[in-house]
Amino acid sequence: MTSDDSGAEPHSIWGDESAIVQLAVDWSAQRVVRHTDPLSTARSAAELSRAAGATVTAEGIGGKAALRVFNEVLEPATRSQDDPYNLAYIPSAPTRAAVVFDFVTSAANIFGGMWEAGAGAIYAENEALAWIVGLLGWPETAGGCFVSGGTSGNLSALMTARETAKGQRGGRPVSGWQVACTSNAHSSIHSAAKALDAEIVDVPIDARGHLTGRALREVLHSHPDVFAVVASAGTTNEGLIDDLADVASVCREFGVWLHVDGAYGGAGLAAPSVRSLFAGIELADSFIVDPHKWLFAPYDCCALLYREPELARAVHAQHASYLDHVDRESWNPSELAIHLSRRARGLPFWFSLATHGTDKYRRAVELSLATARTVADAIRDSSHLRLMCEPELSIVLFDRPGWSDGQYEAWSKEQAANGVILCVPTWWHGQTVLRLAFVNPATDAARVIEILDTLR
Ligand SMILES: Cc1ncc(COP(=O)(O)O)c(C=O)c1O
Image (cartoon, rainbow, N blue to C red):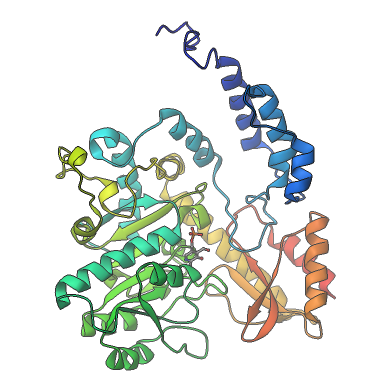
């Protein structure tokens, strides 16, 4: 096969793709710098079908036409996760450096599963992971890999915990394995338990919603088949951090694996103003944080870390005749989670860290925390709103006394339809409340406070 100067390969089955490469690069470049559109929203499949027409055909519609459909119909039917006033669920506000490097990562088409194929990329990913290991206060021998999201990170960590317990305790308990966590643990822990055929044991929360060492000790006394405790470093609904120091010491007392889910809140490790809330995390056995949530990386990116990576390797390394020659001495991310092929999805995060530096990351996380505190102060001082609990991280829960569920719903929908703010109701201690999740340093607290005035 020959290539002309543009890099196109005219004799390949795909023909000359250089024009579409340029169009896609141009589109990406303008999207990265464009102001987001908070009005973009979902449409029904029927509407999309009418607007887009048939796109997958025997002859193909051509790259130019396909890109036009994407630009005019499909992308506008997706939510701008990076809009500064998208404060629903957990949004995502990647740096431009991170976004553009996602494109570079795809262009480089790296197999990131094995060192022999992806050494340079895996080296860079490990540099980014080492920064997190340092924030955790774990030994330098700790390590892990990037997986697609918190759900697969939690599952991979708990699978390592269960297999380690199986080895230590001489097999599966007669009545099956158990995982202990509170009702505030993320839904993905329930999914992981299902996948592992384990039962969830509920540990009662304290008055503010935390997992405490005292409650955990009682549960572990009566549940010898618990193989792992899952603590939250930032619950999704309210951003609470469990009593990690006490929980860790109880786990050590009972010889039970401690997994800390910091998918959202783990970013707070970088912020000196809240670092003390994470005390005890240095004793955990495994940890996850999603850089696509609050560490300014694009989807899909979860950092999965083990204090002793060799335990994960013993569980996750796949063996097959065609894999037998693989160098098992090198750092192979595919041996550390439930995956084999993987893109080097940690590279955009690494590039952003390398570009901006960890000091700027610290400042960016602090900015979201400051925004949350300013908005919480305004709610506390207002005559028409009520703060539900003091924010520990960057999630603010509040209500508008006297309002019905229908009124919350109507207000939320109207704000979204007008492209003002995305703020959706949630459920807290048996009542409907509103929730704001701040992860975007570009969100202006004063503007949010102004918008909340419309709740009068
Ligand atoms: C605390 C927590 N854990 C796990 C997850 C699951 O992460 P992902 O959506 O990346 O699978 C989330 C998602 O919001 C979360 O907030």
